[in-house]
Image (tube, rainbow, N blue to C red; front, side, top):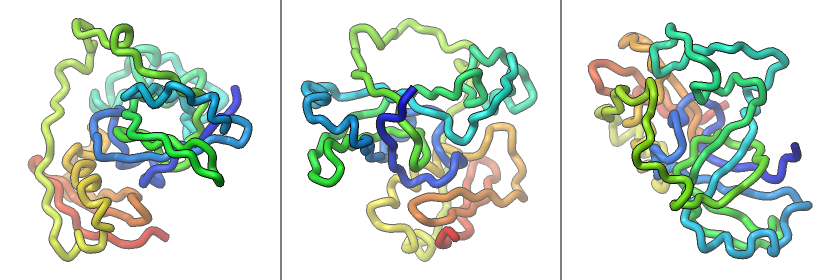
Amino acid sequence: MKTIAHIYTDFSTKFGLPRQSGLIEEIKGRIIFEKEYRSPEAFRGLEDFSHIWLLWQFSESVRENWSPTVRPPLLGGNTRMGVFATRSPFRPNPIGLSCVKLEKIEYSKADGPVLYVSGCDLMNGTPIYDIKPYLPYADSVPQATGGFTTALDERKLEVDISDELLKNVPEQRRKTLLAVLAGDPRPSYQNDPERIYGFGFAGLEIKFTVSDRKITVIAVIPEN
C-alpha cells in the first residue's frame, strides 16, 4: 500500500471530528498528492463527479495486535460488538473509508492537481491510499438497514458561545466550528456536566462543557 496523498483540515487531533463523513458539510479539506501521482491525466473526468470515496489510514491507531470485539462509543463505551460490525479505527488493517463532496479541482504549479472537498471526518495530515468516484446507481441503497446505529439519537446540541470568544475564531471558520459543536464532539459515553472538554481546531484550542443538551464554550485560545 502506497500513500498517494495527504488531506489537510482544521483538526489537529481526532477529538472534535464528526463520527462519520458527510454529517457536517461545512468541514473543508484539501487533498495534495505526492509528486508521483500529480499527472493531470490521472484526474481526467473526475470533475464530473459530485462526490468521491477516500480510502485512508487511521494513522493515529496503527498497532500490531487487534481484537475481534470493540466498544463503539455510540453504544456508551461498555457494549462490545464485533470489529467488522463497526467502523472502529482499531482494526486488523487501519483503513478508513469516507464519502466526501468534491467541491473543485485546482491545478497548481507547486502542488499539481489539488482536490477541495467538504463533509470530511479526517484529521490534518491523514495519509490517503486511494480515491474512487461515488456512483449513485451502485453506492446508494435506500432500503439498507443500519444495525445497532438505527435507533441512535442524533439531535443537535444548543451552542452557547459569547461574541468575545467567537471573535477569536477566523470569520471564515466560525460556521464550521458552530456546526461541529452542535453535532456534540464528545464521545457518547461521556456525560459529565462538570467536565471540561477541549479539541484543536484551525490552530485554536476550543474548551467547552455540556449540560442538558447545551454546549457552552468557555475558552478559545491558540494551540501550543
